Image (cartoon, rainbow, N blue to C red; front, side):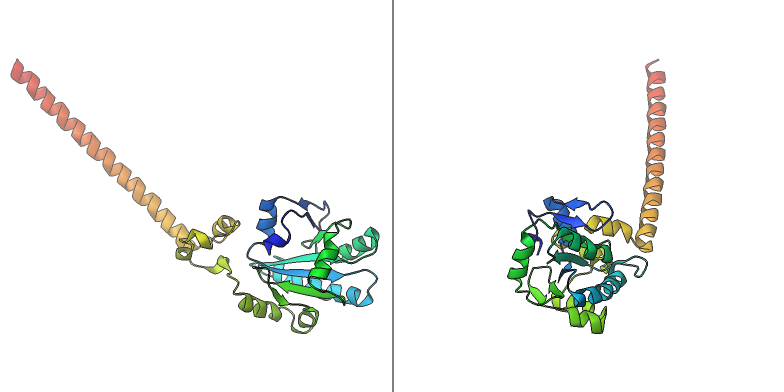
Length: 232
């Protein structure tokens, strides 16, 4: 799935409209995630009706205000609008974490053809490996809400590493680009206790070594003094 947008420019739907155009940025935002490609246009009344539904769905899964651990999910708006003004109208209604392709990017039409999107609104759901989970999940999102994400997650065998035990990270092949950040953020209290215990043990060990060094030095001094008295 990452390959789908490598060498492309994705734009964040925030006030600055930051561009993600490096390989590292694209991998970081797409790797090990379920991807939603939202095809729509401002002229489509059904699309406008569906946007608030999609926003609520996305917020419940991604927004820290609604969920403690945001899900591994990315939403990209694929505009089928006839003008940049129409595209901006739709983007204003979409969640700020939504990504999109610039209006002048012809890849929008290529994606439409690639996934055979004829009717809109359409939400194409992709597994992390790029295969299609659902050619159009609009009805599932509208009727099942966030429950349909659980179904996608099971079907995609998506690994939520946030909840894995520390031992599971011993295999470096399981780690993603963002793994070190998540490990730091979700470090358990048990880890903290182990770290505290280790510091105390090292401190005590260092103290004993210093004492042994002092005792050895004292013995050498005493033996040296005895040798001096013998020579005299």
